Image (cartoon, rainbow, N blue to C red; front, side, top):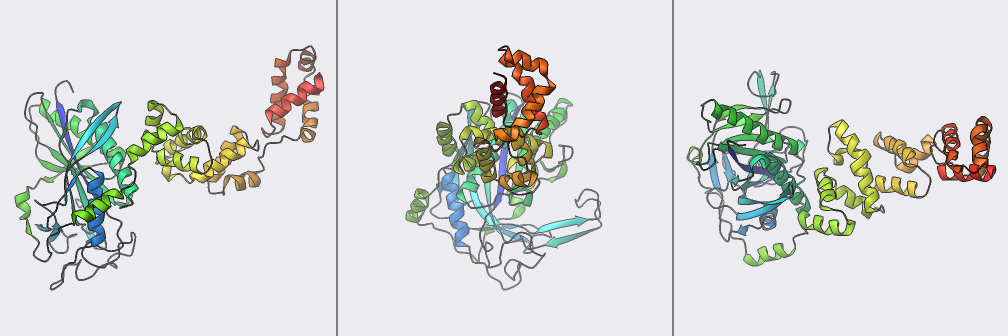
Length: 485
């Protein structure tokens, strides 16, 4: 970083959660049998004509407004011409020089700094189909013996959100890329326009990276395609920065190309030379009329926008009374919504943080998954804490109960009952165990009789061991002191 300055840019593709496709009435349900959600329009059969999906247009405008964009009063669709097996028409209906939303921004927080990421454009298009390469070791076309194409995804409304070049972030560039995609994902989920499930491909990111020496023109960029996790976005930027620096240090030059990111190694490999706009032979789509959103309608949509994740975090920080550092830890763990829901279910903010950032974060890290992927709900966590607060579980026993809930054994109450791990606080049930501990440790008992009450800890430990940790420690201590007074 003493030699080069990075410039990054991100192109994020988001499948909208509409009931039907962008230009036809085919359903958009994920996971259907291949090629069962298709029709003459999305297959591009002769004589078929597209009709624009109003719900998709509305969702795109809402995204643009949430990203502080200007909304076009007049725009139109274009044909992006290229041949690839997963694009049945041999062209994609997209937007080119007249997008629906332009010139916005999204603020993100990284390492104590607020960085404004400019938004170049937000435009609407249709998704392509999905190609499955079979017979090779990598799942890519190289080395495959055959390829299968599923056109169910072809024609699903797809929003492309393109940032302006982000310069001046130095060694924070990888973290900025991840923070931006994270914030964007949270915003889109808040708008309820997409499920933004990166593992299913409903949100995908192309990462552009270039390096230049300070004071020189920006370098040649590469585009790492279809990065499908937040962690991989960060890794892809870092990997490409290191690779390009190595090439430049050796006296080589960077080729403008697309590259593939490999999850297993964290490296990128060359894909193909990068096309320019002229290669796609854009021209206005002749079968669709231009779009002219009514300004009054746009204002109505703007007034109905929900609270942004950034504003919500600021409000929750005040309500939860946490420091900037603690809030950042919550954000980094992806736990804001989980803690908020746990508090809404009856837990205190401190208790909710304790579980999600403690035991649950440890388990998620061990399993290599996001917190939200764990088999426990905010309601479960709130119920678990309520059992602790009621004196029915100690923290140690609560972790055992949580283990059962995570294993699918049921709610915390059900697991507690099935495993029989409730705290024993009945003095009658504990008396025998206390008497046995006193009898087995006469020297300790003598010290307590002499007024050395601190020695009671030895007897408390003996009783806890005898009751498999299910005794209430305070009750046991009080009982010991009472019997030896």
